[in-house]
Image (cartoon, rainbow, N blue to C red; front, side, top):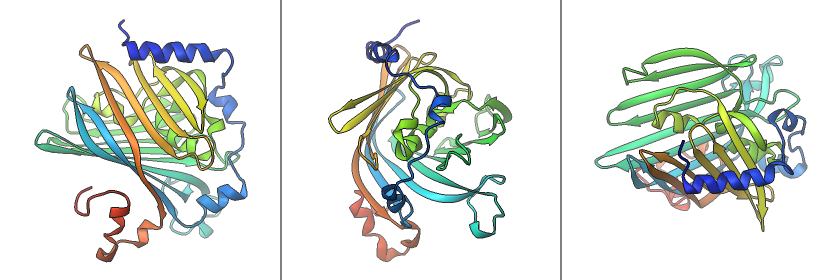
Length: 307
């Protein structure tokens, strides 16, 4: 088994921290969600947080310039239907507060574009539920489109996967509900103290699994968390994939995600994707859908006509 030099650095860094900083997902679940007035004023103010990033996406062995967007907003969610509630006051106890993340990536490979989107729904009040309830992912490019969704059902995730590739096709299966890479972004925003460290089982992110055409399966990962000045650096090394993901976020509330870097080996070459925070605003964007609001895209550093 070959591990890249950058991967070894991550492994050594993590191993050096395991003995003094170990927290499993189960232990983390005992820590209550952040319920301070500051938290409530920020997340229950009737607006979403919109963040744009300069993206350097590696694809087919080359780096592609693009953009990424992370949108965080709280919603009332149905525990049974696992969809946003239209009338939460009439839910008869079926309501759970979630932090929703919408994560988009847009980049071009040669002549044709990629458009990818992932949504993740994580409970805010852990006494109601701790595990992320639902994750869905779509990807579109000129060859076709794919869709994957995970729904929490007891101690398992129900996995629906649809693809235009013959070897992938349409699938329905169940997998054990291990910790999700895709929920890490929400955990950071809700309360970084709930982030697991040490050696855990984790289900890799749907973006990565889709681009590498991998089945949705758990694998072992080594995780560390370090603080440097006003930032926290969260590092995950996936042993089976020999992949590292390093997310840097603000140590202080509201713990905005400042950048991330993902590296792994593909055909003997180190593949690296990077993203850096460009602009961040809070806005009730769902009420700004008329042409008169196109100027707001300028404040996010986005084109007025492209994603």
